[in-house]
Length: 243
Image (cartoon, rainbow, N blue to C red):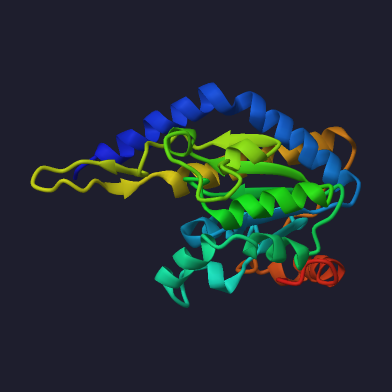
């Protein structure tokens, strides 16, 4: 078995641990404060980055106070090339946020490996206008080496309050094999979900220190899952429409 990808991921995880600890801790403190005050954590991303929105949502061990923004036109399952066109349109991200319910005191994580397309940049700008704290989940290596597609000339990391760096390489793919020039095996999804779960763990730890046990989902595929989640779902469905 070729273990290059495994080794690449291990290297990036070590780099993430060495460079992102302070930001993870700060973001987790903000998330704990938001949840403590009955606000929500929103997640938004386009293309493959929409998976980062689904990672913390409605799953075993996941915080209930998570609201994913899953805009169909910006996802892949109803037209991958169409989603690429749409994420480059200025103004679409503003409308998505305007209809999301996000407001003052909430926190939004915006995932984009390149951070150069208009939808995510507009979403960050609009979210800040509405009083939310913005957190970019991106590759600084990639984003700092490409130009913005937004008329404002800035990439996502330049318009957000905080930046979580997935430490990936330009182009995302990480494995070079003999006989082909195109690299394979992207790392951004693995690293992005690691960042998100680190934030979640540290957020819960900080909430417990505040004396609050936050609502967390139990696996629906255990015998007690449906019973444990019933009250939670009834309470949060009014606020999180994707439930």
